[in-house]
Amino acid sequence: MKLLPLALLVLFFLLLSGITHPAAAQKYRTAAGLRSGGGSYGLTVQQLVLPKTTLEGLGMLSERERSATVLAERHFGILGPSLNYYLGGGGHFGTHKDDGNFWGFDGLIGAEYKLPFGRIVLSFDFKPTVEFNSADWNRFPTAFSIRYIILKQKKTGIFQDIIDKVKGN
Image (cartoon, rainbow, N blue to C red; front, side, top):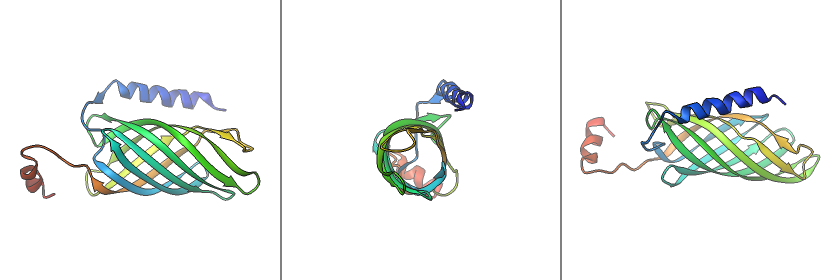
């Protein structure tokens, strides 16, 4: 197990937390897309449920297994709302062709960037897991996701309609 890269990643995110911005942490309410990493690929859907808090569902496939995961994530802005990092956790269940059904708990730390044009969000994360009823008792995968914003974040304020018209939204 390579702990040095993990320690450097955690240190990097802790340093970034010192320059967080108090603005809204993301620019969308609902986003869905594709996820790949750790030898698997699948679908990801994020839904804003509280300010700065999302629920994310993952449906993942690999050569020998299928799994579903639900994660709660807290988002923190970095130098504005387009770039943020997030922390969270949740659980998963699935089936493996050799071992049968399994389940477990997940942690999560990641960063995401909303592209300045269009409705695309790119993210990269580290999602360690603890497994039960599986040949692997733990995993330490990283993954890359690309999501399309289905519902934008609602903007509020007296002059928001004027600002939207000037920006062409």
